[in-house]
Amino acid sequence: MKKIAIRLHNNTDAHLIFHATPVQKKINPYDLYEHQWYLTEDKSEIGIPIDGENYEMYSTTTELIKEKNFDGLYLYCKRTDKNTNEESNTEFIRLFSNIIDVLNSGTVFDDVSYFGEDGFIISNCQGGIKNDSTVQFN
Image (cartoon, rainbow, N blue to C red):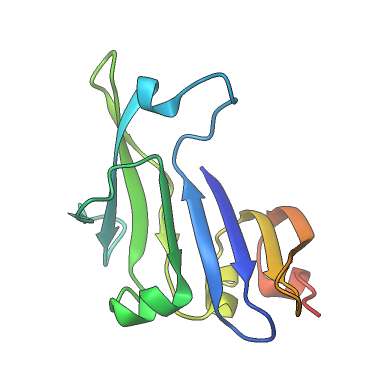
């Protein structure tokens, strides 16, 4: 799973982007798997499917997490192999309405960036971002 966070300028809100099946450009993930994103309160329990979220990518914001009462829930994607019908789940991501809590939850992000004052995305951290103590935001 590929995980990207883009923090908004000077606050604790962010855009979160999750790719269940990151592949090379020449391979279409929809040729490989069917996707369905789920939410659950407990990683050991089967989650509830998120209506209409049957894509390889799931994106949300910390603001939407708060509005939809997803705070503290776990997000994951169930993938079904189109050739074998074998099912597999991605890792579980703990969702929070504050990006600091998301970063400190143990989820390792592939890229943590932020929107600069002028609105451009500034990528100041890449690869293996584990928690906010390793991220310096201006």
